[in-house]
Length: 400
Image (cartoon, rainbow, N blue to C red; front, side, top):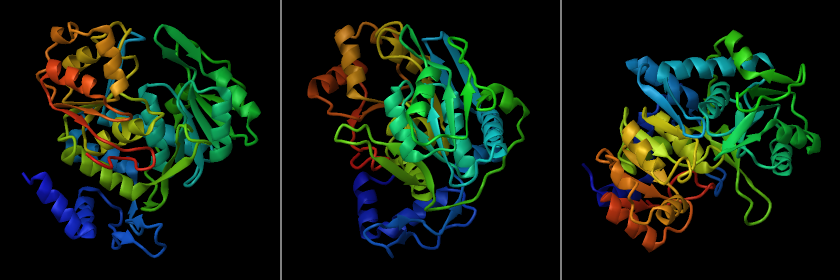
């Protein structure tokens, strides 16, 4: 296997040739002739003349390759005391039906769709359904206040909003529909319709002709095919957290995003098709976009969607239980999660109850990883603890 120094030197000598080779691992409708378009420098674009579809690469191609029975998504929800496993074949069916619902209601390539959902598989289905028909998704962190949601609705000007009826924070059920209704009332821009997934913990009151039931609509929908999009066409808009002023909408293109994320799965995280990868984050953040949804699925991995907290659901051993039960090979989380676990269980008594022999490494990002926390994890896990750095604006690692 090539060393880090070899790979870095190879990239440095000829960046375009390096990424052209990485691009051969993507299935193109039309492969790129121009690797890096510098015509509008410094606003350069990767693989702009390619024609592709991100959903096809994340879902369909694995089914076509005969791996439809492999688990694509594991939903582990200690807050609802449930687990769901979805195969790639089942995911294809779900995604193409929801894409069919959107298409039948007039959503076309380039239209924006806001997604406002908790950590459930349908959040990934919604993202992939948008990608399937070339619509541009803008995910807003589930449970954000009406004002925050309204700001993002006005910025993205969506034709549709996909939401769940509620989210669950620890023991507390948070109805989303009143927040959504409040945001739409406040926003200057009004969507054409909403599609709401009714969860039994708190069902939403629906407005006839404007709010549509996700389950009922998907059950009767036609399966939508993949829409060809340009390499430089947008896949999503994701707003920064707004800690440095007004939230900024970062626009991510289809082709470069696919090539980069697919490349990182093997070269940064050392996972292959069939391995279980867990990013303990939220789909509302860039880590959720890159490493709960797109990265693992592009690489044909099994991705874990965890609806819970590192402590209190039910205890400080919940992360270690998930790793043992689902044979997680790589965990990616924020230092805050580890600090919470360490505070609750300083001697790692919960950790030592579980068999973590299948865990290869733990990656940290999202904020400063203090030496105490890294040292604690190294001592008790006896695995590589790898800190790496990136941000919403880059979509994947700047330094890893």
